[in-house]
Length: 364
Image (cartoon, rainbow, N blue to C red; front, side, top):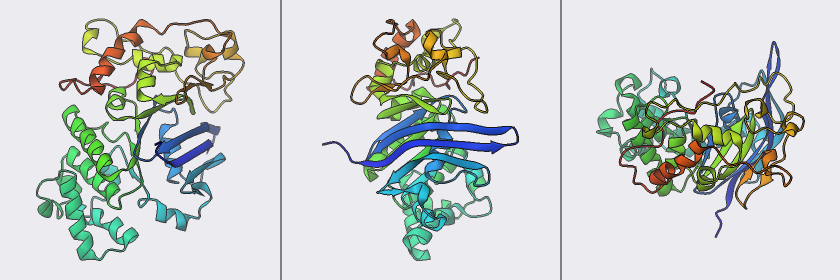
């Protein structure tokens, strides 16, 4: 039986008004999130990953943000149409977020226990005593030692990994239906990163929470994701199951991301990087935004934006190479070599080695 859809984003377009003009940060993004699944959204910095997900929780700056089109459907309601008062009931309660740097999200003047208890009092209406007891349970759940003592400490008294566990406890306090994790492990070392990822996978299964995981690390994607959406220049250019994206990628941009992942076998060989830079979204994009960086670009790529072609029931890619009249193109050798690495991670046989362990290259 197919899991029900808990979130449906349709044709979302977001721009930012600046002194130089409007930046078209998100250009017609659509995706769905099913109950109990992890959807990874990947792409270079500036591709629109964080903007798309912050729009879901209405966390974008009001003064200079313009939602040009789209709807974000959650439990039959369009979140973009809710009043701020109604949105406050959703934010942190039904849809929670974990950010990249806990030190900018935690209040340095408030004890961490009270920060975990706060949403329990505000959203669920627990008394201070019951909220404290539940906060201590949550701290224990996310692996914070001596939670009774830790409850009384301030954020600066925790390590980076422990602070991120506090953030996870806050996000899970109200048992949200959707958890949005915006690069939550980027600032952590590899060992702590692995612990946090294992914790999130464990809690997802226990609480049956749906997760949107934003990252630029494809090694993390291999460990976490059920489905993957690849973003470039404000659009989703490929989406499919994790197996489809890693085993059978169809978009040249996805090929570039996979080819630029470092492995232990690279040795002294120069690591592949995608040439050039993403387009400046202050200016209108003509044709395929990736065309100037694409070694496999066709003439039509510089003239007309490609359709989103269907590969399977779950796999789509926005590239003219999938048109029936397009020439047959084989992915680069670097992409084919990484399939075995991906399979090792997915089967849990990595013996501590993650695919890559590094970030997506951005042209050098």
